[in-house]
Length: 576
Image (cartoon, rainbow, N blue to C red):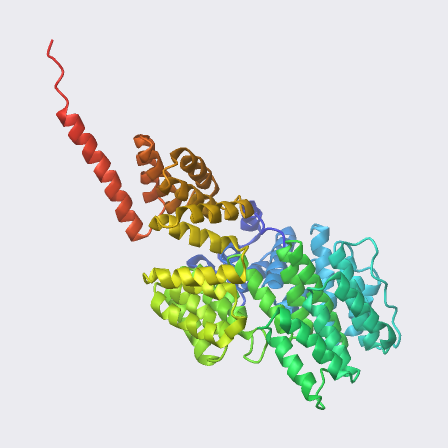
């Protein structure tokens, strides 16, 4: 979605819109100006809502402002309403505001046609949808997506044997794979099942980690009355992803071989799957605006497509629209495979808003609703640790590790080790860190933590140096790791190498108070006292935790006091 119109648009709006005009319907009043319902006030309120990530409010404000405007100003406001409607997931309203004016950017008009086509199909008017998609009504950059959707609209409109296009040969590998996937779904839908399994097997070779292909093949096998083969496939998924709820549910269903098998997709569901796939392609290409648009369009066609809702919420969270993300995460029902991850997303969004209490409350609520879910418990343990409740975190991690048994991952031991260390149980922490390295010997994060703690405690310094050198070779651009390497050199008395590495660490992670503190200590030991004080003073500007703040202030005070004493003890200059 392109950026909201700049403030310069307000000048023609102020001319075109009567300052005292009243809106024709009440809407949310985010600001006093918006409550006055003048055109410029509504426009400003809409821009403010966009800045806050409240696209639902922005839609309301821009649409009300458009009702009061005329000419080019009205077209511009309708375009802003369209963009806000798409971003908020209100596809029916977006279809109403689809840009038609020549002054609108071509890409926006093409998106408008795609939105209208999808909304028509969702509303039961597949003929209208098919007409738009067939008659080149949707051009670049959405043409490839329109070609994937068109056969689905054709069958929904009553065509018995629609043309199913071959995947584009010149597309990137991910786009080609998902076009092949769309073709497999269409072939099964139209009864041409003899080619379907071969396409899926080809896809599993091209993209062995793409779970969409594995799930769909398993469901196809179930519909072909080949439940044992489906069970083997789901077992393969679970070997790599033991916590996968969807695979667990699918395996149990296939194992029972009951009358309930996953139904074949409807035309609308097939089109929704094509949109979901395209959204994932966009995410892989870092096109988050394109991705979220596809996810909302998919949901318009299939409101039970909870994966699309989860991904849309995740995109909003990543963009910093935490309130919108929470709203979307909360819509995911408890029986959906994404439910626990959505609940964790709610807690993480509160943490992103620096509200630890609400984050912890959301995590506790998740565990209370799903007390046997180990992912929920692990997440709660993490929030407990962040919130300073490390003893409780240790207990919870221990429950999860016992439940997982031999399948407990290195990351669980690593997380428990950090919590052990916070409650001053270093030997237990050390044991867990060694266990984590035993399970995954090449983890730089674990090597860094263990090596740093040895260095900080003045223990096993040669081993700490070897670990940290190895971690630094694996992650040479991670400031925390280079800081640890510098710190072990400092503890070993090698000040030149300590300063060399700590200076690099400060460049890599300039905002970390601990890194700046370490460099200050190294400078001071090397006799570079003014530089040391500068680094310590910088620490105080970086919002350090209370313990570090007090330590650094004490070092500054001690230096300044020593300087004062030294100055006072110097003989007074002779009087001429």
